Length: 299
Image (cartoon, rainbow, N blue to C red):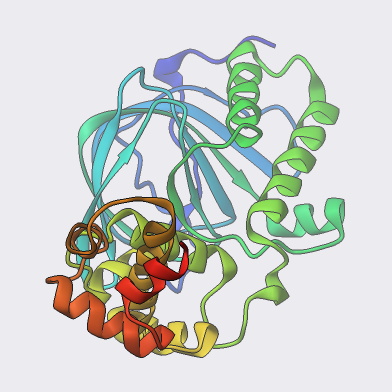
């Protein structure tokens, strides 16, 4: 079955306003190259298209949404995280994952080329026997999900010749990978942050230790408001975000004292402390020994 003429296709990706399940034509301006609408796929709907700009507020996907950047270049846009707009970059072949019924707000001015898939949670549950704790991720590069989305895209463009069995197999692949990435839905602590959110925040802290790290920055990484994040983080991790940042800086300093010959002043700077005195004071309080004394103990 050949794909329909581009001019005949309108986007039917089911996005709705937060709190409503009635799909809206929010991508009416998009040019749709191919769609799985007529293929008889159960629990999976896929579109391949492009659009110039997309300004939306408080939309939710009616199903888990997975999209891949089909541009040969980086794609840039702003997303509202908590109360702050954050600039995101999606490299070629990277993914945006948005959980079912979880709101997002985007400001897109660039041209986008994408393949987007809506996965129905009930169908995934029937295939896998479990619900995945899907979380929003932008710019994900994954060696399993990326090729799976490329394969779906190619199948839709070809007209769906592999049939419903192919679609069900791809659903199982994607669903299994979502479980691997995020775990089961009940694994997220009530009122706390998930393992995925904790990993994202930790990676951000470790990457930006030499810079000023605000709680608002960490909340944006987790996709939560600052107040909600601070409470949830402390509940899960057992310490406030500010203290967590200091602990990561101290742990890096401890490793550098053992593994490098850098001066203590340089280590303090490389770990984000204001000066050597600040580093030494915090280090002694945490480990009961000064940085210089610990270094001497290594012989």
